Image 1 (spheres, rainbow, N blue to C red):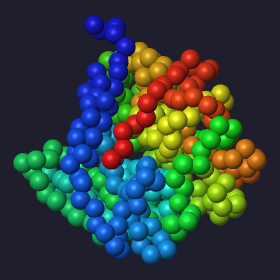
Image 2: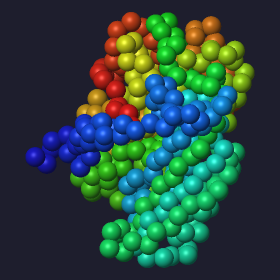
Image 3: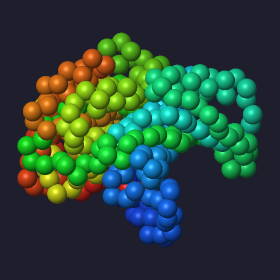
Image 4: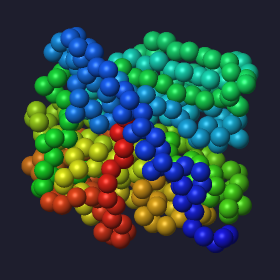
Length: 349
């Protein structure tokens, strides 16, 4: 048993079970407003949208997850607010929306001014990177319900209805351009912590590069908003066919855009050192890594082939970016160099 490879489900997070639970909820949420504010269905994917005249208002909500356990252990909370913002705004920009406002939700067992101030530093930095305002929030003290604290938020974005990036235009021949992640971002930390426990790794231990494990795990999620908005502005209308934020479930986020084509990643970005270290510590199988973590690609933009070079050029001004693959006839997603082939898509809510 000790030498069995770790899986995310074995560490305590069963993505399939979570998706089934989400589907059970979605099946009961049938009421839809009419008139102004009616839902714009079918094109949301990473964010929900409602009609607002010539525009769509875009909403996304998410939290930081068990990365907070690492922050608590290191008593460093000034970066996880960036993660909270990033996990939301990166989803919103996937439909072409510009984030304009944000609200946060902090649930805590005991009021702690120092902790809250440190969280606020990260939230403010995330807002600065996204060019939006944090307009409000809520702090709930829940000693009988919460151990420690949890941090989540919701973003409001806006996009012209005729500029929504829906994924519907994705077709064989399209090019996949990948934007590099900054590390593990804010996904898979239950598996990360279990792998560390299995291998006896401590947060103060060093990676081969000399970086401390804890520092590598607290690198905040990269925010892609400004780069994507610049890309959408620079390329002709309709040139960007789809945008996928690579979060929990890893590469399975890409087929959320369109399922009846095959995505082939034949030139993947380098995998961050910390993720390969986690794989070694836990003996995690290669396909499990690609279905759990971003594996070096935090965002994937799909463009018509004639716009490949310009798309790479614009994104690469902000962070490492390159052509990572192509779209062809078929279904699923594969990484031939890693001998990984995945089917299906992450469930949506």
